[in-house]
Image 1 (tube, helix red, strand yellow):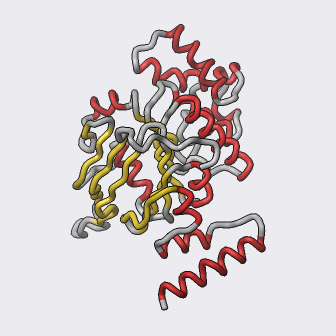
Image 2 (cartoon, rainbow, N blue to C red; image 1 turned 135 degrees about the horizontal axis):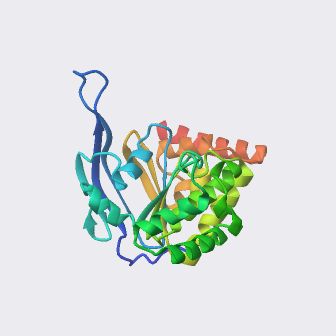
Image 3 (tube, rainbow, N blue to C red; image 1 turned 180 degrees about the vertical axis):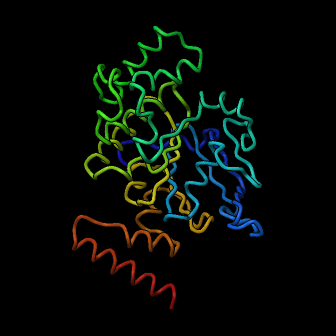
Length: 287
C-alpha cells in the first residue's frame, strides 16, 4: 500500500464478517430467491484498509450494504467492535453511526442539492447532541481537513466539481470521528487526476486519524494503491485473500489473474509483457 503503514497484526478485529449469506427475491411472484452472497468471511483491524475487488454483479457492494444494515442478512454474522449488528434495529443503527460511516460512489446524489454544505456537515454533529456553536467550529475544521475553504459552508453542492463534492462527502463521514468508513466505489465517477487527489486525501486522513476503511472497487490498481490486505470476490464468493502486494501483482486464483490482465497499464510495453507472462502462467495451470 502506498502512503500508509500496515496495522498491527495482533490488533483486535474492528469488523468481523463470518459466513455471510444474502439473498434477494426473484423476479415474479412465484420466483425463488436469488442468492447473492454464499458464505463470505473477512475482517478488518483498527487503522487498516481492506480492499474488496470484483466485477460488477460480483456481490462486493452487497457486502458493504450488509455491514451498513441496508440489505437483510439471511445467515452468518457481522460483528463490529465486538458486537453483533447484522440484525440491528434502526435505533441501534443510529448509535452505530457514531463509529461507522460510508462514502458512496456518486458524490452529487449523496448530498442534498438544496442544503448548504455547512448544514450537511453539521447534521451528523447535531444528531450526536453537539451544540450549534461547537458544530459550526467543527464544520470549519472539517472543510480544512479536506482542503476546502471555510466559505464553502455557505454554498450549495452544485457549485462544486465532482472531486470537491466527494471531498465534502468524505468530510461528512469524518464529522464524528468514526472508527470505520465503508468506501463504496468512492472514485469511480471521477477523472483520473481527481481520483488520485481523493485517494491521497483518504490515505492522509487515515495516517492522521487512524480510521479504518473497507474499500470497495472494481479497479485492481486503485485497490492496490489503497489497501493493506485485499479480498477478491467472484459470484458471491471470496476466491482469494491476502497481502495487497501479493494478491495484486502475483495472484494465485485464475479469476484474480484475469482481473489483473484486464487492468490498464500506462506503458503499452509493460502491459504487453504483463499479459504475456500471466497468459503463459494461465496456460501452464490449465494444461
